Length: 315
Ligand code: NDP
Ligand code: NDP
Image (cartoon, rainbow, N blue to C red):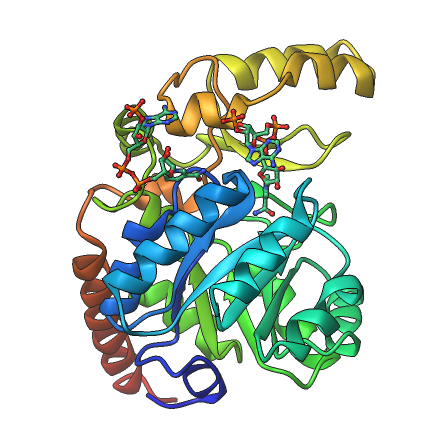
């Protein structure tokens, strides 16, 4: 398949592995790229020296294109941008912030820029700032999420009406069949997170991977809407937040309950009761941990067989 997204990134399949804090280091990113997708190093949880190390290792592990996800709310963002430019990273996915501030600098340095959005207004703003493509992330997605609660099925057609640049769909996609659904909406690529948390190469703690395998529909919920909305797997920490919210806790009380480093504690250190576990709704469908390469092959085969099935059902 060739479309604007495969050409933009120079990749075989329009399958992009989401940049995920604590879960997507160089091992996962390089394996996804080697398998024909686009791997992304999640820089949000990395100190600047750690990001440098991961980029260097990724360059050694793959000669194919890979990207870095840069959450724009990252505290030492200038240091991350310097590293990205110095190390010659060619593709950056920005998220969680205003794309007008850093897109020009990244573009001046020859970097392809993609911005993650959750609504039409942000999509138009991203396009006006000069990004090359956008990721439209629906309500099903794990981790940080839009306030509008627009599902991927509704969001993607709205974004396609709003912008001319290519749209990549994210949220609720974990198989070839769901990828086909996204492409039939008009998206030119898919960004997949949760499925790759359950890869052998993801740096998520084994306890986190194991508990995801137990999830069913209803195991995740959007939480902390007063602070930054985030889709979490329900656990002890989630219940504490819910209880506090039911008692009308203030923002300050919620911030105090969250504390610092909750996500690291849950997803990287494996405290699945007290830590923050960011995962998408699709987790209820995911039943195995596999090498990233097998995941990509499975998605591609599943996509092709679903497409064949549909072709036989022409109206
Ligand atoms: P390696 O397997 O080569 O290195 C493992 C390193 O990770 C060891 O130095 C180990 O420290 C450290 N480590 C293991 N568990 C933890 C933990 N719970 N908290 C902090 N450090 C831990 O891994 P990579 O080459 O993939 O990683 C290089 C660096 O990047 C490491 O420091 C790793 O922690 C970090 N990393 C960060 C990610 C993020 O999102 N921020 C994602 C993946 C890795 P020790 O020697 O003390 O056992
Ligand atoms: P907290 O404020 O609770 O904790 C900060 C965590 O980030 C710590 O675990 C810390 O590691 C690590 N960290 C890495 N680099 C730095 C740095 N330069 N300064 C301070 N801490 C750093 O934040 P969260 O765990 O909730 O979120 C961590 C980061 O993830 C956010 O700053 C943000 O950039 C990013 N994020 C991005 C999202 C996205 O859009 N994809 C979604 C959610 C978060 P240590 O414990 O080893 O000190």
